[in-house]
Length: 510
Picture 1 (cartoon, rainbow, N blue to C red):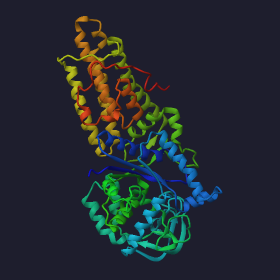
Picture 2 (picture 1 turned 120 degrees about the horizontal axis):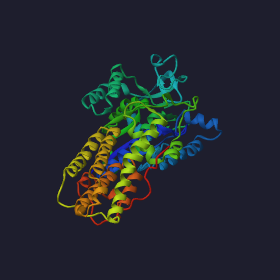
Picture 3 (picture 1 turned 90 degrees about the horizontal axis):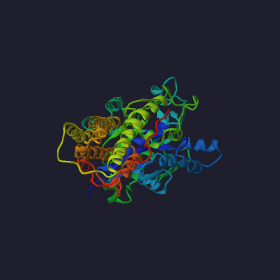
Picture 4 (picture 1 turned 180 degrees about the vertical axis):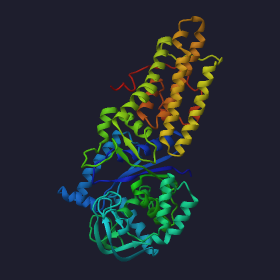
């Protein structure tokens, strides 16, 4: 039984609209999912929304609707923007889904029956927007150390998860599996946090009604984070379809923002240990995005909707910029000036203009039919072929490390090699001399073959662009029917196939 490659995003709170930070994780997860599909792997890509908790209940109350009505109204904003960004998720989970509720109740009952959940009194500071408990020593100027907002004193009888019982085992796993938490700076944070000592985690609320009732005490609802983390196994039928669950779990990578690292790298694996389930292979926490050097906030009016940038630059340009501009795992700064510069230099010029030039020359010199190359190779041909041989292994190594920017840099290095080849071979000069006709055939073929490889390489990142180039190359079958690395072999373009230049892929921005 082949295991699926399983990639997840966090599930997003429905108390606010999706913004470029929300979309950052989802676009990265989509590129990763598409890349593994391109390698011929079975993939399961999960995203969704977190719809329980006090923050949702209060948002609904402010708008004069029930929490369920609020969740139903807000979830549309997420599904719409993901559709617009060409996100290829296999499933969209909502924590109000009956299946999720059933799985969550089964899971917490299992831990309760094992003795890992007990009743006690909780007293401490609580941040409602982040749904996070904090020790007094963790507060910064009396406020939430994560978001900087006011915290509330909470005192009530709750059920607790014996998180402290799993501290040693968890630390041992992280230290012996360095890939488990990435990047390294986040791994070091998690190790440091565990070594300071873990306290048991409150995992229910008595004063809130909007949540999943505990199966062993209906007077309390599940703490929203305990509920939310279980989406990763409820989506793949834990406790409902054992074969499907085993085919998919463990997750290969949980992509998250660094602000929710401790839930995913400490609480979640401890929950899985308690249930005797395998741990995810990796938790990868990316950094935050600022806008023109400032943190995004409603008060500053600098929260940017993905729709705004898609309208201005287009879907694939949006995807390219956020994957190429920043080193995934570290903070990044969004700038319209940088985005426009990337668009013109990388997309309009290096990619779009190159494809247009190559296909225009085939139309001009061979009536749009790609000629058969000769057996004779010259130095520029060898250099281009060697560059083509290097690019997939470079991309693959980068994608293994989730270094999306480096994978794209490797592809753009190949584009630079193609552009050099176009200039060095000067097909326009060859076309003037009938005795060089066979040389021109070879040059035109090599350029088109390089464009074929380009389409395959860019399609996980720029799906519409990759497919658009594929159609211009005259292929009737879908690009996704071809898998890497086999399809990256040189010389697979069929001579005699007709190509067409088409409209510009990326018209230049002023």
